[in-house]
Length: 33
Image 1: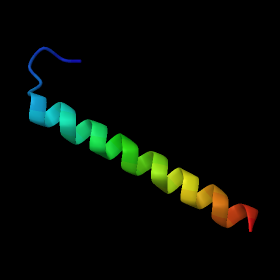
Image 2 (image 1 turned 120 degrees about the vertical axis):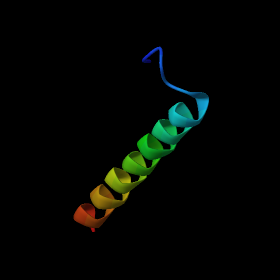
Image 3 (image 1 turned 90 degrees about the vertical axis):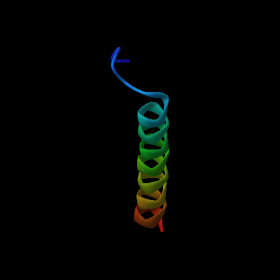
């Protein structure tokens, strides 16, 4: 973490990371079908 980051920014980054993970999971499901 950067020292200047706020809690809100960290929360946004966590949310973005989960969205990226969900997209990757969806993409792999589509490829498998």
